Image 1: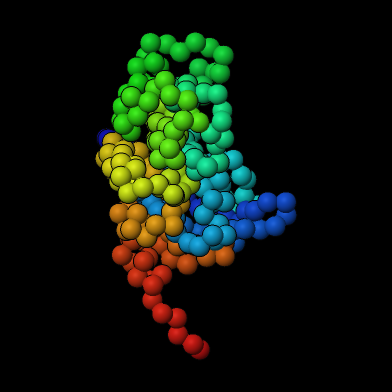
Image 2: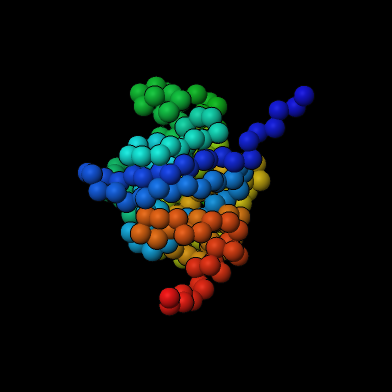
Length: 233
């Protein structure tokens, strides 16, 4: 009998989390579907980045539980502004760091590793930048470099914190196309975004405000809920 994978990639059960004793997330209960793009939306301070950290396993919840049904380590892509552009690394070296989880930082990459790194750069259209240093790149080029590094991890769960923030429309569209291709291959993508057009292109959506979940479901449902006028009581 064929085993069918759980259609839910991540179960969040009354998750509360924060930093230095201060809660940011408050009893968030939600599910995230497998092999789809899920958008986390909400204003600054709503808890989107904190929730990504909890899902990634880099931040332990203070209460509640997170259950991932996808084996292996998630790949976590931070904003390009969070990575010093002055690091003395080339694009190829940065992407190759995605193989460290399997090889370790001091072991030479195999031919298969090098081929994978080249394929990941080509996938996000930065192969011609392989020998360029990070400090010579635009914001969009650095963001695609970080995405290629995540792809080199070959994770089935990709987490992105505002991947298109501050990028031009061409760079945003390139990233969106790549994410759609990944989910078609069975990868689960969760991205925090301020861009409602980007959220509308997702397949599922969670709306956070003040660390609480206001709505979840299809983008049409969640964005309609977000834009609906509040009524006085």
